[in-house]
Amino acid sequence: MKRICVFCGSSAGAQPAYAHAAGSVGRMLAARGIGLVYGGGKVGLMGVVADAVMAAGGEVIGVIPEALMRREVGHGGLTELHVVGSMHERKARMADLSDGFIALPGGYGTFEEFFEVLTWSQLGIHPKPCGLLNVGGFYDPLLAMVDHAVREEFVRPAHRALILDDADAERLLERMADFAPPAVEKWIRPEQR
Image (cartoon, rainbow, N blue to C red; front, side, top):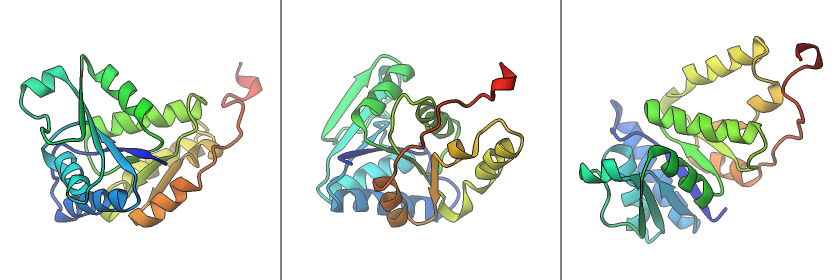
């Protein structure tokens, strides 16, 4: 993987562990020679992960919509900063530039971005790994909801396996490097057609 897209909060969150994890991920990416693609912000966990990659000499590519750039949320010291017209363009550009995706703790935007690329993986639009860094159990309730959807037969077990979740960033990156998408042709049972 040459570049990983990190989705994360524009807030630092309530627990210091979130910012600590964001900084660790940034340093880890740089140490492995993996570039960071992210939402281009200088605030919250977004700023922490970008600053950590840059401080360690790594590549950082930000993608930010013009409306957020005008509010001076954009990070000015990146390797590259792409200013785009909309959130849709932002997500498409980040996906095109990335070889995999990691979600750190965050809010609605982080959830939406992660589930969009996860859905694209399910549909076979891309074969890229999608990881959740489950810092301090942050994603436990979300993973429980996904497991509930599996039990209720809205998500196939093979598609549940598309979510690589781990509390340890090193292990998560190793699992992402070894990822091979499942060979599942259909997600609807024949009797449902």
